Length: 334
Image 1 (cartoon, rainbow, N blue to C red):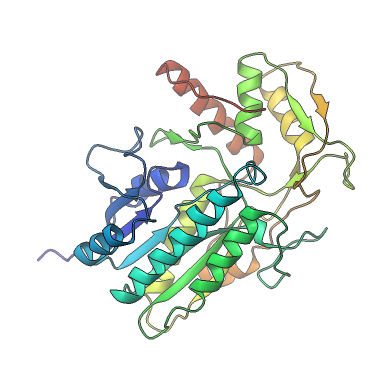
Image 2 (tube, one colour):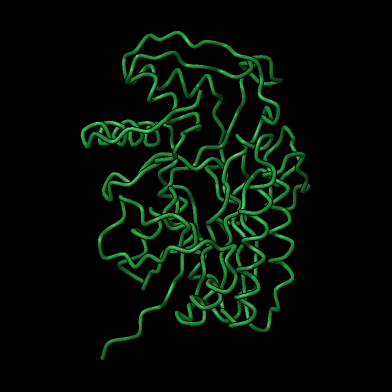
């Protein structure tokens, strides 16, 4: 006798994390991807995808009422701080208003479980590891929109819906076996930018070299996409257990590398000798960001197994070489 497969809706299913997650979960669960963009070209043909903007409340309600998912994994929204000055309105609309519509549908149709992709950008900056109890504060529209989203999620009626808020640190690299990776248009993240510069023999830029850190450049906690996917899968299992309550978890590697360390390592393994070019600091960059992962280890039984520099850089190089072979290019913003 066949058992009914758990139904999971992934919002933002055409994005980097969403397309990786849909592929990763499809063997175990019945996955439906929804996104305002068409299905990712890297997703398998069999993936069920619905094109919808979460700001379209009536259409979203209809989809959720029809599918009746067991879990919604909410990944949709603006996901970087690169455009916080130019596009404040879009952070508010794509993050907060879209999430508010989703929460309304979740409450209306009593969806049992929600996993929300939040960010390390909700934390007030400090020079120590950041735990889930660290102070919440953001001075930019990206972090502020995610804080607003978290606050409305925390008000969900616990009789009908449980949630996990997952605060991602710097998600990076690719899924080699699934042939999926970062394909932002434009691409603004350090690791893909660095690898692209090396492979194309272009100038590498460092934004600020006078931070209060060991080498003067920003330190960040980089986590391999595969570890993030396992963290989400563990969260699904956590929410499915009857006695477990809603919770918040950091997902990162638990260690940090400087911009200079990332660049030097990438140069070393590619045997390149490009000299980095120093530019002025960007407004919202903080000097140090490192994740305390004790809570996720203890409660989710999760720990990062792939998030060392060797794996992250190696899998990013593979991905960019794969894209080149497929004659797929994208715009990089330095």
